[in-house]
Length: 122
Image (cartoon, rainbow, N blue to C red):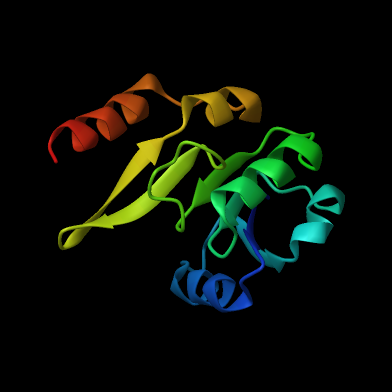
């Protein structure tokens, strides 16, 4: 069962758990940043760390294929591969291609185009 790990934010992990369907095919866990190395997370969600701290962890601790997502990194130049941010009254995302390449995960190119199209419509 794939594992989504929310890093250093147990309240956000609880929100995700309470909104996930009962028949979910993935597990949502709350972990501390110093436990990343000992977990088998396919997705890492950052919401409290600075982009620089995210990048440091991704460079030094994450040695396995994992998609990284940040909700606290609107510029998306360092850190996570995907950065979700509020734009007007909705949400959008940016893609950090360097982090995505480092993550060693395959993302459908149509997803990348969607992120680019959203950015172009600001």
